[in-house]
Amino acid sequence: MTRPLEGKLGIVTGSSRGIGAAIAENLASKGCNLVINYTSPSSADVASSLATQLSSTHNIRAVAIQADVGTPEGAASLITGAREHFTESGRFQIDILINNAGIARNNLLPRVTVEDFEATYRVNVLGPLLVTQAAEPYLPHDRSGRIINISSISSQAGFVTQSVYGGTKAALEAMTRTWARELSERATVNAVNPGPVEGPMYAANPPEFLEGIRGWVLHAPLMRAREGVDPDDVVRDARESGGRPAYTREVAGIVGMLCGEESGWCTGQVVSANGGMIMQ
Image 1 (cartoon, rainbow, N blue to C red):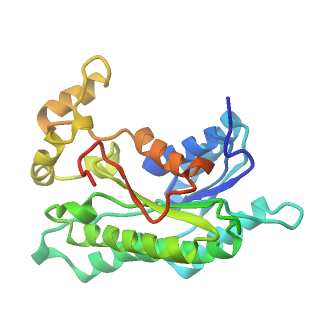
Image 2: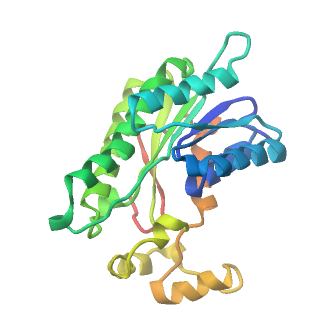
């Protein structure tokens, strides 16, 4: 089995669970060494276990590092921790950076608070900016670096209750285009925009929100659940919701595709990973 990312180092923020963990698994399967980042002390055991499992299964080096990437100190400590673990013969290089960490605080316009705004923009917008700033000195100088920002179709769809969350993802996509120009001799920079994805964030949505996006789900060709292919519980849920969310591995596969050498002519793009929910 080929390992196209053999010996490279990838940092995945917010990767103890969900999409981030699936991305880490995808990169590890291709030979990439990894930094598994998490924020809360409650995620320490999960992140450590994931790092151990990936190291053992894929014969790579993986470490878990706690850091709140939405603060200058946290972003700096993430990169410092990576340097401590992955400097060899005085050389340290970050080949792949996945800005995945994010939160969602959804509410109708009259109920949005300044706290909601500041917390969400701190993690979803300031966080990727700070981490990319801290990582920039250690990116390659031959265009082989890869930076992937995890956005959302919420940046375009105008979903009810997502004034703040959708705004953060639109900002992230704007930064993606700017960084693609500023870092063009160092790395390609792209965004990936999932729609609904399996996991606790999607499951936490109230019935009113799910009903509001049902029309979008019904018209997303790849969200149609298939009996005998998708798990029975997914098929049952799809009868109510109109379709199934993405499996985390499906989004991770598109991210992994953008990390390879063959993706070197793609930069500044928002790459769809939403089953056709948004077509562009």
